[in-house]
Length: 255
Ligand code: 13P
Image 1 (cartoon, rainbow, N blue to C red):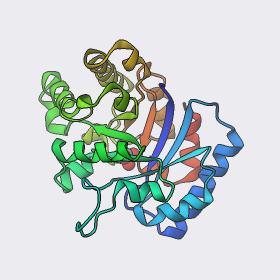
Image 2 (cartoon, helix red, strand yellow):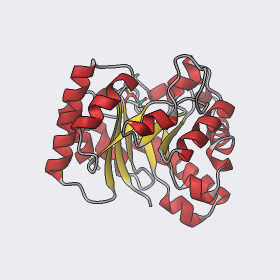
Image 3 (cartoon, rainbow, N blue to C red):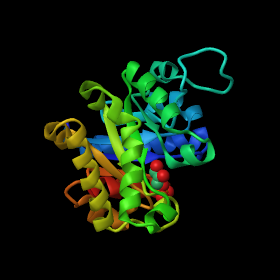
Image 4 (cartoon, helix red, strand yellow):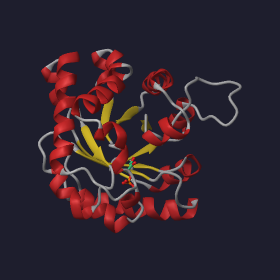
């Protein structure tokens, strides 16, 4: 079902103690607001925080997500954390395909599809990120539409309709992440509409109507309302502005 989601990607920020405090505040906010069914709050702390955060949030009100998972099930993969390990500590979702993972850790569609499948096997929801770089944006609409389409075709569009129902798509233009350069509401809507159309072409209009598509990239309380008001924008994936409970709360209220 199409949902309204405000998700916080904490990236590599906060100590465990700070993260636990932040999670408590977000959870208290969600409880106080008594959000309607279909409106969800997600937080994605670093791996080291997940078990402690799981203990302090109301899991009916806040969905705990990880920022990554391994592309293999288990075994001799030093440093990796598997989807089943995450599930075991109360994680319900995982962010995959973030541009920082693609850029700094060379994650390509082949690796990402393995991760997606393992996460789904464990029953985790997947927030799958797509988006074009600054150069690709400047090269014109033909190119950036194709870039985004390829990111989908090579990964989530290979899934069965049943599995695809567990995918939340996040459009995060790379040029807008952490730069203060937000996409205009019109730029976001253009891509979200394109993504929804591609979902309809690949599956059906019904699947497209049910797909949740989030916007991410310098989204904050001062611009969230305008962006979230667009018809194909179903909420946001928030980086820096998710690290302050008050600011994150205002973004939750914007949708
Ligand atoms: P910022 O909101 O800090 O630009 O980060 C967006 C993001 O990458 C969320 O995943």
